Image (cartoon, rainbow, N blue to C red; front, side, top):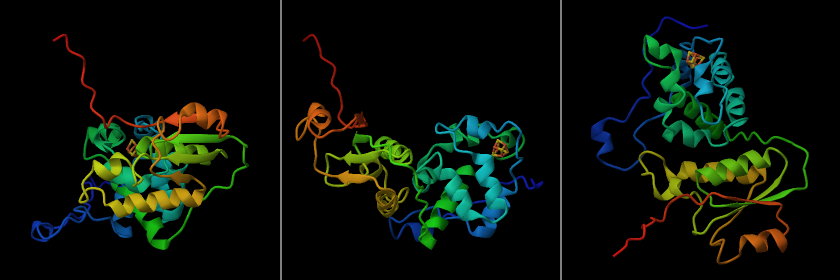
Length: 247
Ligand code: SF4
């Protein structure tokens, strides 16, 4: 299915004369036609090094094949098997160091625009208002996730898809952690983060803000009094550590 086209399709950035007027997202999304043209560049490698180098093992070749045949929702569902935040990772994951950095196309030409394609199917799914909510058998286990940044959201998404009950505790009043306070609007719009979190709510994940685990409630209390079977701590490194000095 691959074509001889060697150029990665541009994702159509806003022109500077438009960008200076606002703080909205600079890179615009692929159109369905551009996405299919880009997907056609995939070599469908027998040993896809893209997936081997994806930290969460997204099945790149398989979701790209679905884009080629125009099954964009199927492609989104395929990504969600391994990654519950495709609209976010499609925008801010450093693909050049992971999947695209090891894409075999890059030995000769530009690597496949895997991040652009991931973002395209996530935004396509969002525009149609479609939700991929897997039905799995409940395990009866309850997990508390501390922190609603990318780590906590990823763990919550994976665990809910395995049938566990999940509640995310966030210390601040807004969900999203470093995604919200650490990445500027023009690169990752706050609305995208809110939509991804709402998607997770529809999958069954519960969220609670303004809870400082360790002060408001301790991990022991969560496990012994509130009946959690496990606690995942994904608080990140937002507070600087000052090493002790001898003076
Ligand atoms: S390594 Fe590149 S060309 Fe090969 S399957 Fe992955 S995306 Fe396609």
